[in-house]
Image 1: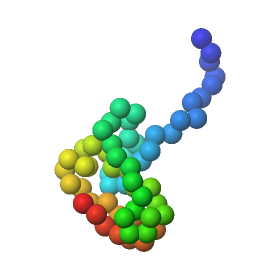
Image 2: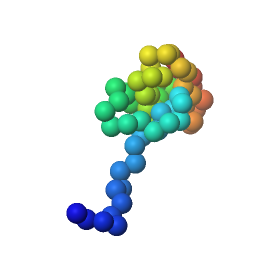
Image 3: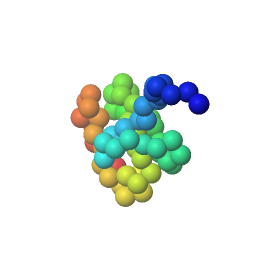
Image 4: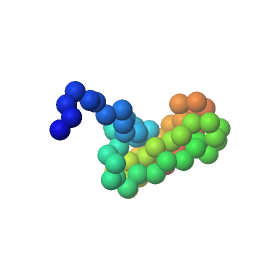
Amino acid sequence: MITGIKSAYKPPICTSCHKPIPPKDDAVSFYCPECGKVMIWRCSKCRKAGVKYRCPNCGFEGP
């Protein structure tokens, strides 16, 4: 067993609720439909509930 080594993996953050998205979550990612510059991440919970997201670059809001 190797000790003292930290994983470099950082889970993506949901753009709606700002929580880390676990690896097996049924999340989606896509570029902002308006500016196309920012990757939007949505966790399964926010997707199902229809929680709005906002692009940090252009301010576009989506369902």
